[in-house]
Length: 119
Image (cartoon, rainbow, N blue to C red):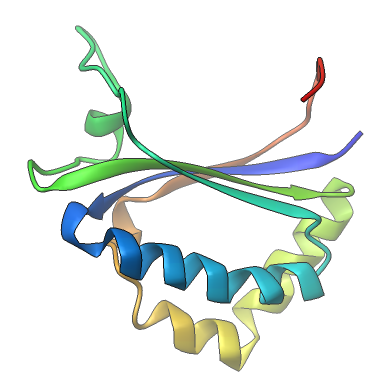
């Protein structure tokens, strides 16, 4: 089964198109490093919770939209190797200096699928 790296971040709403272009330009790099799929989801119905929620998790401001994203890798080893290579890839590091969001408030993690019921 595949390995998933998931992300939640806050993007200034005014930067939506800039973010989409940023992600579109990043995918060939991820693909070169072994990713098989990347999905970017713009928040549309992201309710506030009583205890916690997506917006609070990334300290989203009033002029920001929560984004939920994931990258699919064939396995954890491929994802780990990709992350190591990205940290040493000048092309990737150059793109990080001009991100259309505050990367310090992004949360991410790796996940092992335990159930996949189709698409």
